[in-house]
Structures are given as structure tokens and as C-alpha cells.
Image 1 (cartoon, one colour):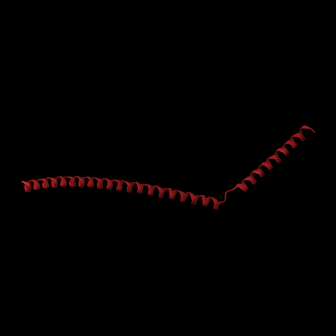
Image 2 (cartoon, rainbow, N blue to C red):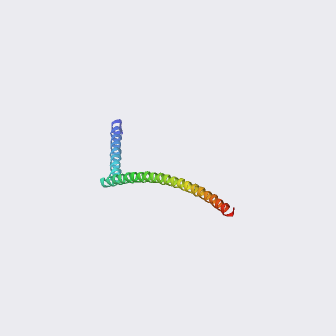
Image 3 (cartoon, rainbow, N blue to C red):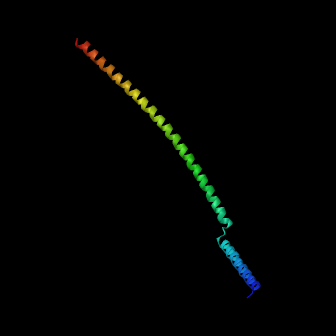
Length: 108
């Protein structure tokens, strides 16, 4: 085998290896190709997830606002209760003083 035959044989072997590699690459991409329906389904799922996250964020915001309103209302109610209890305490004290005064007048 002379030098020319060796070069030609090497070129043929390299060309065949290239063709086999290209064919293997084509086969891999042919079988692993993502269809348009899969891409559309993923896009739809992504959109639904985004909408669900927005809905969750809105619900959290609403609940935080509602909790703040209820806390404020509870604080006001507790303040009103404390004022009513203080008024009742004062009224009872005045009633006791009046009873004591009336008893002193009737006794004296």
C-alpha cells in the first residue's frame, strides 16, 4: 500500500465515520424531538401556574387586609368594653355612696 492508497483509504474511513455520526445525530434528534402539542401544553400549564400564583397573592393580600380590619375592630371593641366597665365601676361606686347616704339619713 503506497502513500496515495493510504490517504484515500483514510479519507474514505473518515467520510464513513462522519456519515455515521451525522446519521446518529439525526436519529437522536428525530426520537427526542419535542412536538408542538407538548410545547403548547407546557405553555398552557405555565400560564395556568402564573394565574394561580397571582390568585394566591391576591388572596393573601385580601386576608392580610381582612385580618388588619378585624384586629382594628377587636381593639376598638376592647376599648369600648374597658370604657363601659369603667363606667359601670363608677356607677356602682356612686350607687354604694348613695345607699350609704340613704342609710345614714334613715338611721339618723
